[in-house]
Image 1 (cartoon, rainbow, N blue to C red):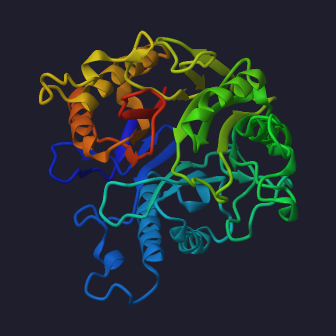
Image 2 (spheres, rainbow, N blue to C red; image 1 turned 60 degrees about the vertical axis):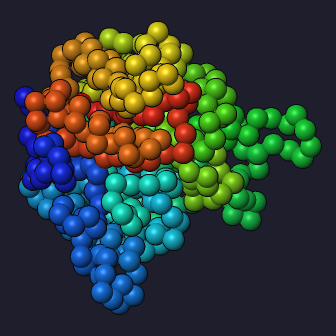
Length: 425
């Protein structure tokens, strides 16, 4: 096994254990970051139950404890905040974002790595408003985090302050990009990305996707020394389920050799501006680097025209996985109305997901025991304990680098679970 869990702790009231971080070769992954003390739910200094309005705003206290937890993970893995190459943040309320940004700016001292921020429904702890994930590179020779200084084709708000791109060896990290207007006076959505007045003037999500790719993503990739054909992983956040087919049409047209792609639902609103429908973040490889993109099979992808996974150097990026068999939700996941109290649908879905993931990993020469980042998107977090039990059983008690978020919808009728999985090779 090439993966070493960092600072494992028990999941409350479970035999399973949570890996607060993972050291995998030259990488450190931290998933499921929150303002917890791993005993009390949110830490006592976050809730201040006896005097909750004393001190900084609650979301800032939560963020400060989250960054304390992140520092501990990075230190255990041989890295520091300066080595972080990517951040992903989810919030239950937009009110949590400004206090979180204040804590983040103080932690990184304005050297903030490429970032994605999304609104979601619910997290695992009562009162929790923030969930984050981070990736860091243990510096060695030319393999280290290098913030790129190019000017992107869009404005990054000073309150956010993240880098427009970051290089680490042959890897290139690009932040989440939306169709927000390049000129705020013409916003909120850029004029090129919105239909004209009247009917039949274009499909909004197609216009936004096309605009993001052509006007923002491609120039950023070029400035970072990458290109669309070198993109190895994309996370695509969509607000509305009916936008999935139209998005996929545009995505396939621009990426005939697609990256591993996961379409992740958001709340409504889900982004910095309520009018936005989509956000895309990417990881790519340098055009002239020694690391090359390798498509991996082993199962059927969730959407036509997508791939199961992409291997890039020592990382395997899987596309989003759901509990399907022959293009349909597995039969065991559908409750029998005649016998409604038999079966555990979420467990049946995860079992099918793990079968697919295991086959993909074997095709790439690795195994699920080398998972470094597991993101679960549930329609109801009450299903989480059943999935946790199954992970514990299948991976022999291995500490799990797991983050769980409740989302508003999933693209398959009746489904309860979507998994985004990254594995070390």
